[in-house]
Image (cartoon, rainbow, N blue to C red; front, side, top):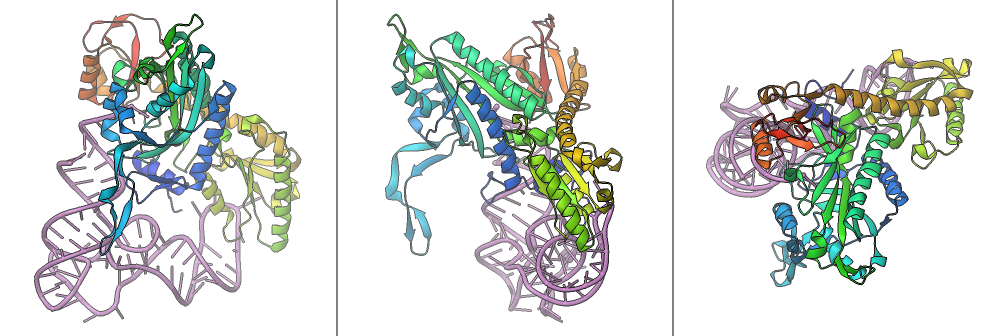
Length: 504
RNA sequence: CGGGGCGUAGCUCAGCUUGGCUAGAGCGCAUGGUUUGGGACCAUGAAGUCGCAGGUUCGAAUCCUGUCGCCCCGACCA
């Protein structure tokens, strides 16, 4: 058997690249650092978008669109942000090319922009500059806006989905009349949208809590995050929600009159998740056979492989497959599947043998495979295989065709739960309390994982750990035990344990 | 940006050390036939500016210089 996927145990990075390539998710483009998202990868992102968009809408947000280009002076207005993003901005300096004999196209030196434009690395500045005109009164608040777009951050080192120079994301930007309302918003987005989406749709368990001062978003008062553990036990920041205080309102002079007629600066939040989630999805569930997709995000839920050799067998099995597909599509539409009927594919290609098809659909991560051959038809039955339970042993034989649609619907839900439970067990099994820094240094690489340790709360200590071990504080979990202790590095008092890990 | 590795057909790679005649293989692809319950087989065929640009040479995939890109490690990074 020609194995296409490098086993995780042999080379985790190569395994990841193999999955991305062989499942047809994305490839590197000829533009440095920029990827082409292929149809199967984009379909997953579309399903993520749809679920997230619904969560945002259900919590009162609306979509809008702001420009790709940001005047350099806007970016400069919020000092922390300017500093944070300066090193990774693409800049537009000219607005015209010209054809020159022998040289082809050259940048027209006559066409220099009066003010250079930055390709958005994030849109707080252009949006708050716009909000100045939109916000006059407390009656204009809250303003709850999201946008789906691309952003560019000129990264030194890129990895498909996980870190690319251009990526797709959503960024929410809200304005509020009070500090409390803005803080509630940042928390609500984190817990009711991001955590909920990660756990219930992606089946990816996440820790929730604030970042440390050193890890927060430039321009934020504080940053909340969802943080997940990948199968190599490294952490992935999967989403962030920022309380921005009045920093941007002040930088862009956004004020409103409150009920007493007083002028106040508006309070802000911003929050985002990106195509990085696709990388997280891969690294949470997939195995050495290929991609494993949680049913709620799978572009195809069920593939039916009719098995035949003679034309009359093809005719019979394909007809049965069609009938089964109709049965599945005819199930009551359940928002659980992503706001549309179950997606079914019949693979009736006759240039490939069934075994080939089984492997191919496993590589692509289709949650349920139905095998339907002459022997099954004799019994009016089919064979069901769940993607996360590989091997012949796990197949369900002799499932009556009449019962298959209902059975498959149940299996999809069971698989979703099983993936989440397995991922959570993996994370919990690889999360350790630790009190000795020497011990920590020994264990951070092998076995690795999340380490719950006391920390004195200082930037210096965090930087020292980072410099000495490459591990960072991923999050100060909301649900940590109330347990005073001593910093594992300095021995100074600590209010509770934080999560140290190596991260993507 | 520093260290290392690699760029030859869509993919994986051989050939390079020691320059030479028509640049190869496997997979994939096309056509025909036999097959078909876990990656079938036979036959025929299409497909490569040897990453790019210079240079050395009678002659460069092969040697030299430069350059671009990818991968790994570091630095950097929400």
